[in-house]
Image (cartoon, rainbow, N blue to C red; front, side, top):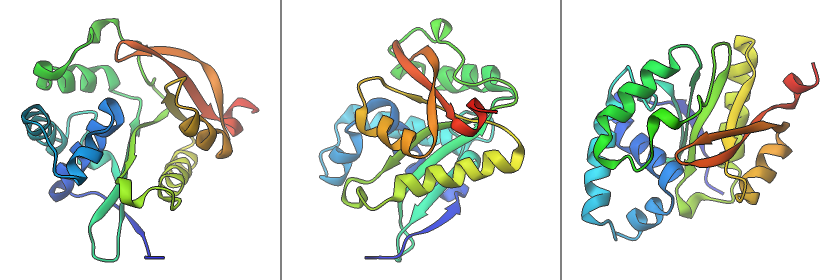
Length: 197
């Protein structure tokens, strides 16, 4: 099995970060990209999202991203995670920049995270690299980051995504209510070490 290494993203990785975010919130885009079947809308979204990911002041900034990289140095997966402080300002800025693609009422969204938390926002692995423990390792790295900061690790899980929910639970996340985001109800999950303390 090919060795995977993990590193923090750089500004040069913004296009890959954009692909990860688009996959996490829109689904199936990575599959189309890997097969060379991008639509014009996919291209436009990725272009605008790449610009958002290049910035320092958005939710999806490259500065908040850890990459999984193959032996050839190519990113194969990533997790965007950030502290809760300043969330509302970054969310407003992020979705204003993506206004053309937003199909939900941002003002009706619950806050995904709060001050004092470490939010694991967008996670995705390229289809040919799935099933190798990459997502698990990215999540474990983020949990370790949260622990070093003395913050709970928080994430959202679509209730119907049983595979992701099982992965999160196997890493010690448990349900802590619901949140309405992106026009849908999601489970709010927190590291069990925080729940039991």
